Length: 128
Picture 1 (cartoon, rainbow, N blue to C red):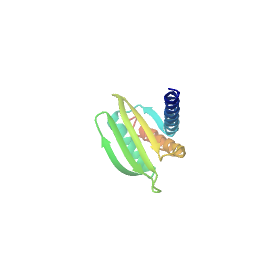
Picture 2 (cartoon, rainbow, N blue to C red; picture 1 turned 135 degrees about the horizontal axis):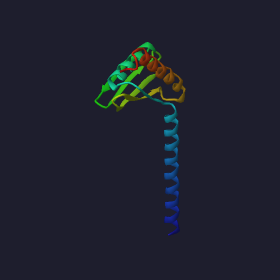
Picture 3 (cartoon, helix red, strand yellow; picture 1 turned 90 degrees about the vertical axis):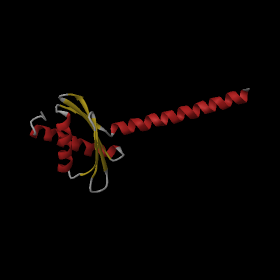
Picture 4 (cartoon, rainbow, N blue to C red; picture 1 turned 120 degrees about the vertical axis):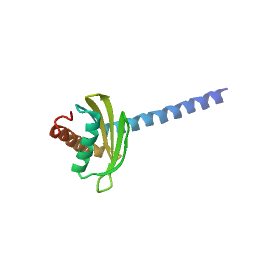
């Protein structure tokens, strides 16, 4: 009986350890993202993101454009990946999430891309 109880306790500790590690890893990946809501129609926001990527020297890759969500992939000349997700919030607002690479070091580049998107928004008159 004590043997079974000991095995269950050990399994419980292993399970909690694995879950804790997953939560820490998820927290780190969440900090490397840059999120912003812009005042622009969804279709215009997709065009602004593409223009901002080109202006930053990012090669456009695969783009999956749907009615409510868009995922755009690209890469820098040095091979770092760029993943951008857009989603419609309402008729006049769009949410954008940018991630560069797989580490926190890419958050600075993600911020530069977001700034380029915002500048593109101003150049296009707010995207409306």
